[in-house]
Image (cartoon, rainbow, N blue to C red; front, top):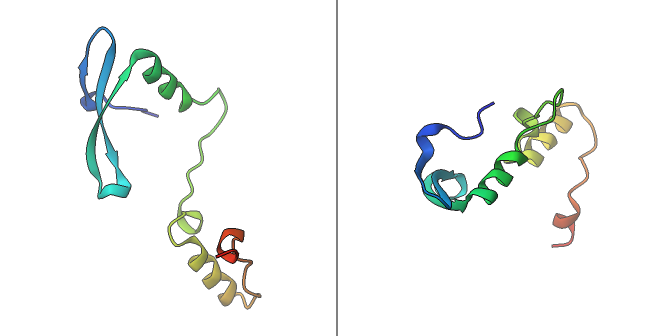
Length: 92
């Protein structure tokens, strides 16, 4: 697993590291982040898993975008009662 590729690093000096990252919620826009070495290492360590741990990615029916619509369709095809709605949608 690669946490950050070398081509995204833009500048490194004695106190800071600058790199590009992509914001998917903002139309895949490339942005610049500048962090001191300690904060950069802390963020990098958060994505390194201990030995024998596997990172799961939710894809397919479990992907977050339009998840309830897909689950409702599966329930309907299986002739099951509709799934319970999320609590926060019931409060609106």
